[in-house]
Image (tube, rainbow, N blue to C red; front, side):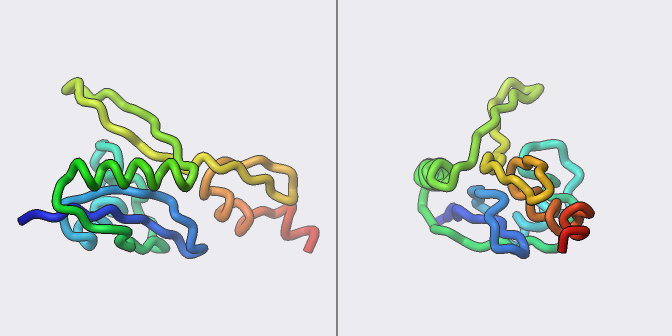
Length: 128
């Protein structure tokens, strides 16, 4: 029987940058996230990133159950759904972490890109 896994992509700062659901292996799904040039939501979204790990959150027997938990997990962590309508008319969703951060340099940044900003922030480095 096929099982569906709700998973989280986590960066080097242990920040959850993506929450998803798959019926494939986690190894295959991570490969799709970081190596695929596909334009489908969730595929190739993190192209070339080497700092991500994929960790299982929970396992379900039906896709419907897994999607419900995926959605509630996204709401719980403050992720925002952005809907896309593909050429075939089907709805799909891209997820962004909507948390807002403010760097010490004064720049306001939305989502996990904040951690990349502070790593390379020249104004912040000049004050240390």
